[in-house]
Image (cartoon, rainbow, N blue to C red; front, side, top):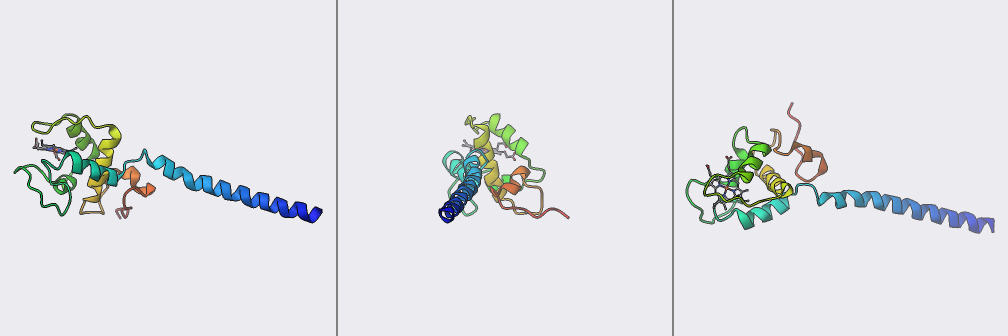
Length: 141
Ligand code: HEC
């Protein structure tokens, strides 16, 4: 009887530990919906921005002359997330105001981070660095 009880208890403990481990593993995934996501940003840009901007690295689409490419935007010196958000909220003609949400803007900025050539600089969204949403950049020495 006692043996049966201890075995059962062990099982219970194991069950409990597994469910605790699972709930820990599940949390970041849940939260991630609200983190800027480069993949979502790319998809959004391919829908809303391709008519004017070259969005992907290897794009061969025709766009109007003189419109900066996404790679150009990403690698402009002193580029900042704040500047990009301001442009998106108050664009100059002919760029339309697309009424993006803050998260949609940051999704696009996370994608721009992926197009940065100098990975040693501070990313546009530095806070994302430790969350695995964009590649981790080495700390500047
Ligand atoms: C109708 C054409 C058009 C569309 C659509 C468009 N843009 Fe633009 N965008 C432009 C033009 C033209 C400029 C340059 C304007 C200028 O220099 O004043 C520009 C400039 C920008 C800049 C400023 C670059 C800098 O560093 O100053 C950013 C950022 C930008 N666009 C992002 C986007 C994003 C993101 C989208 C999609 C969500 C988008 N644009 C959709 C035409 C467009």
